Amino acid sequence: MNNKFLTGLATALMTTVGTTTLIGVSLQSSQASNTIDQVDQIGVGTLVGQEISDFQRPNVVSFGPIQPDSTSETASKQIATLYVHPWQSQLAVTLRIRQIPVLTFLGSKAELAALREQGNDIDPTKIESKAIDRAKAFAKRLNELDNDNTFKAENLSVTLNPDKTHSIKLNSEELIKLDKGVILSDTTRNKAIDALQATNRLRRLMGNAPPLTAVVNPNQPRNNESGLASVRPVTSRRKGMASWYGPGFHGRLTANGERYNQNGLTAAHKTLPFGTQVRVTNLRNGRSVIVRINDRGPFVGGRVIDLSKGAASVIGLVSSGVAPVQLEILGR
Image (cartoon, rainbow, N blue to C red; front, side, top):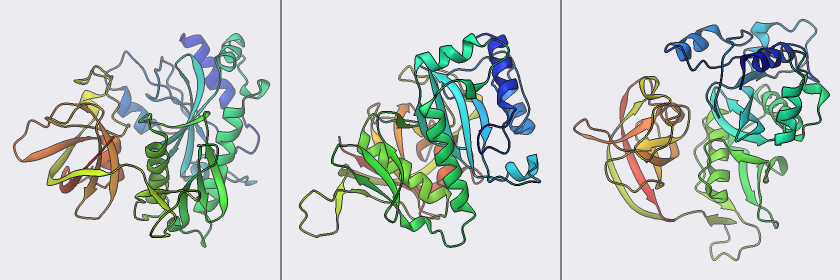
């Protein structure tokens, strides 16, 4: 993607769109080695004109309630942010909560092409994009809930629908339907696992609620009448010390040939097959996250798993560096 297009997109997104109170853009450079640290320090509303790829520092869009005296400081306090970026030659919008990727809304190749064709006068409001509209509405609702004193993250759940899609709900309210246009940002390509993991991230990041272990399936017969259907069985458990790795490896090839994304939910393990799903629980605080094995390590004695920075953030491991964990190997 050329810098001319990105600069135009940045300029367009700096204007108010719909119910948005502040829109800013932040793009990753493939040339400067210290870009990640620079972007973290620059924050919302500053353009760093450069090329991006997939989920690495996409365009930033912050949403918040409309206020007559809305300022950058006010908008920056909103927990839900949107990142507009190309993904596999199509338009995509990734929603993050407190900088942790949760869901990605997929647009079309035509929508991305339509933006590019606008040259330097890029205006996303001039194209019809269901992905942008759905992402904005969901982000706005999450920010509203964050400011609602009656909201409880424990009331978030995930349900299997008759059409085999999943819905994240707050009590009986459907917040978002995970259809073909909405995927987990670090998708495992297993719809049930993705839906459960997205819900657990919301529960954790919006209120420190304990993770769910199952998806509600109202049509499945159950002996315990709990209304829960297990996603994947636990095949084995083990305990040990976990660590994490991040910026120094960001963008490098992992052992299975992928590009390492420090913000994804992946991990390195010495022997588990690539693609294995592992539930990692921090025994110091009880927080859990499901990661996918895509790398080898750790190569420091006494450690059983090396988490990505994104996964470490979810379970509160970043500041301590290491912590005792329980690993639950999930079957296929």
